[in-house]
Image 1: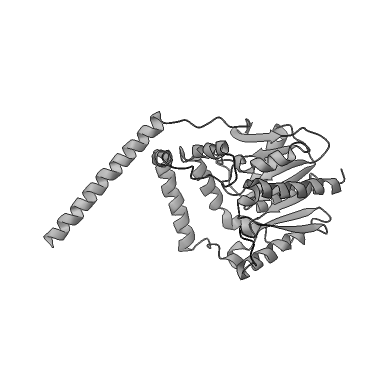
Image 2: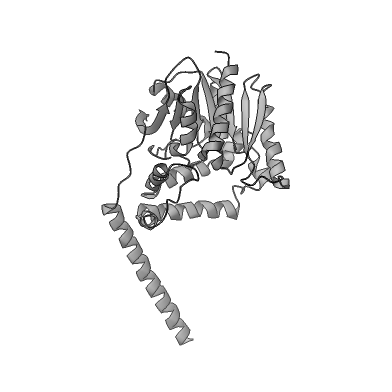
Length: 331
């Protein structure tokens, strides 16, 4: 028994020493390591919070395309959408509060607040309607609420593998009070701590970027290393995830957008094989978005939740649908 106690004591002693060395090394990295890159766009202040805006293409009477990213997804990931549209349309990419190069803020992360922040940001940026909004993942519920609040300004919607309002009930997303969800939030909080003390940034300096995406240019993937140099971006993601269930509940009521063009992009996997039962259910659920309008269409793309727009060939398909959509929009 004494031998076992000695072994346990030594184990925790060495574990403590290792932890101390790790924290000390991380703090040194925070002090003397690389600093974040400058944002590719510009910072625009709304209610004392700096929002990162990366707009491309000339302003015109044509609709401006607004890209609403998924949870924690920054403007870098939508590079190919911007490249594919900027010659014909104005493209407005932005980082929500706490995401990418935007500051954290203290306002609630509910879809109404996020929609109002975007609306004020558009005004402060000198943008004007009409808008076509393309939303990825959690950006889908956000852009739906924006359209409900500002119906006269939105002329088209593009749902890019958007989170379904019944994601918990139909697709086994973790319920709010479940151990699985609480564990996930706890894991994010742990990651925030290790990012704040420099450990994650230090570890990432020896590896490929953790947040790299297949298909993006190397220089953009390298920029994503910035998001683990401190805990800010992880905090922004956590703040949105904490409101995940209330956001979905907010958009579970039926909606009718009249004859507004709606395009629904659904990822059906990298391999060109027959969809399994789960994927068939996802396709059917996403098709429900098309029923919110008399002008709805679903497009299936071979790719995953991210590569449908980070791989150029897939992004080109989405860009083609957006360009065709704009020809049908009556200004």
